[in-house]
Amino acid sequence: MTKHKFDLVVLGTGPAGNNVTYKCKEAGLSVAVIESGSPGGTCSQTGCDAKKPLVNTAEILDWFNRMQGKGIEGKGYIDWQKLIEFKRVFTKPIPGDTRDKLTRNKIHLFEGKPKFVDENTFQVGEEIISARWIVIATGARTKELNIQGEEMVLTSDQFMELDKLPEDIVFIGGGYVSFEFAHVAARAGADVTIIEKNERMLENFDQDLVRLLIKSSEASGIEVEKGKCVDCVRKVNEKFLAECNKGRNIFEADILVHGAGRIPNVDGLDLSKANIEFGPDGIHVNEYLQSVSNPAVYSAGDVSATDGLPLTPVATLEGAIVASNILENNSKTVDYTGVSTSLFTVPALVSVGLTEKQAEEKGLDVTVNYENTSDKKLYQQLGAEYSAYKVLVDNKTEDIVGAHILGPDAYEVINIFAIAMRAGLNSNDLKKAVLAYPSKISTVKWML
Image (cartoon, rainbow, N blue to C red):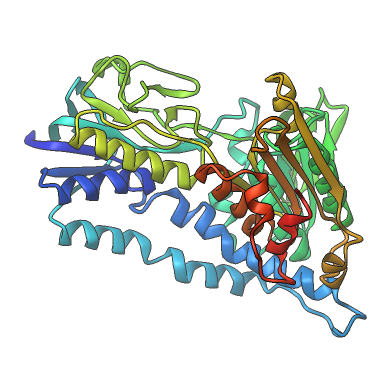
């Protein structure tokens, strides 16, 4: 065994881990990084950054088709193989670039699966690594379906590497992954079905807008099946069968794709040996993102049990807070105000702040501004048949409590609300803004 000692060891090379790694190295600490997967993290290789070329292409084709007979003629289509090759232009260099950057900054990279030996020490293969501080930023992984034949179900990572798109696809679970990839695959010519065990879907979003998104999905050729729980998966000849509700419903496809959620990635770390408290929601931390049971350990990103959503910007934010608390002796806490989340469907569904249901549960006195905007001139000019918004304003303070939008480029418009909420601007402040017109962002004034 070879032994190493550092000031700081960071588990993970995604946005949370990187923020800690480079800030602490710049401050003069000796830093090592342990990566059990592909260096560079999930977001850049198989997550939000990687999926964006696919979503962009689906949006372009959708817009092209919406404008048929309105000045656009002809037929567009998605060449799936070329699209995946284009995506790889951005993802393939990332592991090598990550290793090179760590080397240039004299940060030691250990590649392999780590496991704790004690509260300050890891073993990675034949290496023993100890540190004064440890940061766990290992992200999330696909959760188990716990069904017979689960090994035949592709992960979203595997789906994004398909050189050829199958004709029939079933997504198991009605979450982010299923809806986003279903919208891409349907526009690329596949017959797509989403199977969800619950009657309600996408619970983190406003349900009025979710229902409109489902209508939009079905109009795009996506079959959405609610109340269907997959019990087992079988292969018959060249087809895969997803059996639901004890065989009462059977769905046949060329491939089945896992879209039923992700869980904190702590497998194999032996957290108990390091006295690190954790549960199904992740590693338990205090307000400084420090382990509640082992003060040498901090945690950031999707692996942590915090109030933050499992999003790349949240992981980046938490990584910066952890770095500050290591360097400045627990001086900062995390403010999650104004963090927006986007579902990159076509059209997109976005949200920031409270839903109407959450506002009611908190007993807030709010005005709810809700409107289907498909008949608005701006959206008619885009050929958009499905668009709407819902904005909640506190009647006492005029503060924006929540904002929810479905429509083209909604993920850009929501940032205005997110900035306002984080900066303490209320609805009256936004009403005074002079916005470029006619732009999608100018629609903010309708919503107030």
